Image (cartoon, rainbow, N blue to C red; front, side):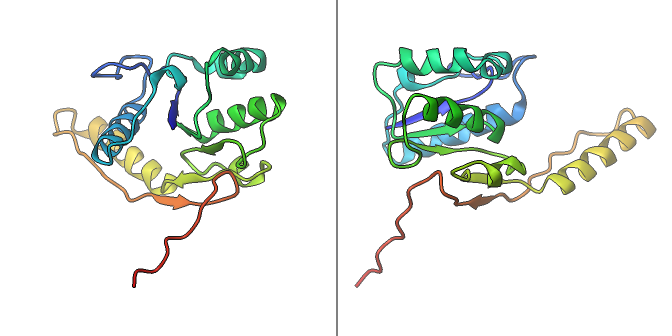
Length: 173
């Protein structure tokens, strides 16, 4: 049982709005495609997709949202590490052991992801190079306002830490 957790992510064909970053939209779409390919269900009653960053800053609101769920998923997949960390704190407050009872996965590999206990499993992005590419695009757009838009794609890396129970696949005979 999987759950999605994100800031201002809402379930519809398009999540993108002025309040939602394209990154969240792309993460949501990719995860939805992957779940469908592997015929894994997504119970939207177990998802936290309509909350704002302010909701996650309010510890009691996060606790209340978790308590309102009829059942909790096995894995919370969060749109970023900061949200995942807030979720871990709330789950621990409610008495859950991470990852024994519930696993949590983040995205971004922020420094706090390795310092929280248990350390957060996350997706690492090449933040330095994303920043450089963004700065170059801004300068290009200033110098040449009508130049075509550029699409850049960078590889990410799964960083498996202690917030995820992981067993390596058995070798095939």
